[in-house]
Length: 625
Image (cartoon, rainbow, N blue to C red):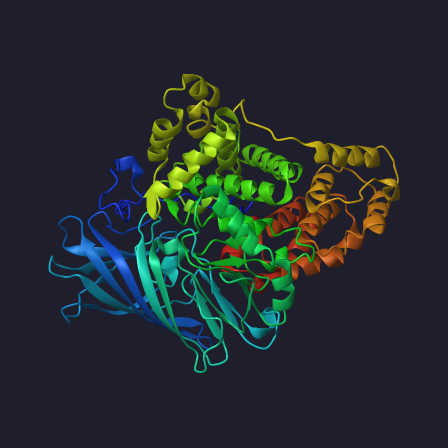
């Protein structure tokens, strides 16, 4: 998932006494050794005793009732003796459960927890190998966004998409919902005729005549990588194994913007080995999608905010592609180990970007990342336990860990390792790591053991220079945090200083600037700018009308802080149609800092809220209450 750049504000939960999980390493035939502190506290499942191995999903998508109905047939295996199998659910209606011997099971659906949902306990015996759960989704499935035609680009047909990370797959499929629990799946999905269904699996490239679709995922994946999208969707190939899906009115523009994704795949393979998922396609979703991108295997779900018209924001796709190795191929065993997904992916993404656009370009991303990490530490607190790489989320919502710490501190740690051991050594190590752990799950301590045995062993000077404990088991930003070059940012910073000193905007030297130089410039504008100075910038560079979402967001943020009212109508329109939380939270938070801003924020949100995904609604509801 491309980084949120925000902190969820959620209440602490009670003790989750019955949560259990295994961390099976698919393909090895062995189980990881799990100490009590390494249990997955965010699943009710007893996968350490009875673990699912394959899902056969058979569902129908009902837009009139806004429900998914059908059955989940689960194959499972006993790892040790147990008289029941436990699944995670969230507001699901369970009609019945039928065992493979044909008998109806006397299942028990437990009380609902505000974060974890309800455990579904099904009695089984040692002779059972499968069961079928007949169910339908509830009125508020947090993973799903049902869009009316008016909320789509085409304005003619409804749309549905899912967002299952972190623990939201349980709101549309009864499942063992932990990142350390992998399984294969196939699916039959029935949708209204004229619409296309897509999943994180082998996908169609044309609509079916009757709305019936079949899917297959042969590689084992965890539940958070289950994905479904249904709508008026077309397809355009980029090359033999990559392509773009989008609503027909958006498809030509999306295909042009993403015409380099095939080259990205080839670049990634040269770095860290073969792409193991068959096809790599991208789906551009309607504007309410709450995050930048989601790395669903074979089919990245992407925000339309990357369609800037000049390919300046497609670095997000490099991030989601990198997840095909770090995250999807080798997965964090629990949400406490989230940095093993995202820190690795940010590092890999920047290696892809450097190979594609050059060192001075990627250096800007490293510097922006450092700024984000610094801001994240300042918001959480320099001594906060939540600024460790190894998190402690027991008894709390796992989304609390979806911060820039996992992304940027994790990536900076790997950058330091590279600078210490040399790039060639680092690349050989990572290639071997991905190969040896393919389709497995891993905990932080297991990775650190592997790092020592396969890279650092015999080099006490390297270990001392890196100081692993300061990164993984200590707060804040370590003193040895590496920095990339900042030549281009120095030039952009000089122009920001010149503007602060009174230089007219038209005389600033901005020719040839990338999105990232503009971001650096806007982030470092001085405070207390007058309306005249803001207007000078706006007239020179047309920032209020910018079609680049990253630039527009930062400009609107500065407009709120400096009370530049001419930008407000465009900002309101931006907030009405853009559901990406990275943009929403800073703008609403800035408005809430003043009494007049609070009035404006609530007025905007009252109109915009129906266009936001439930995850975004949860965040902004908390912020505005």
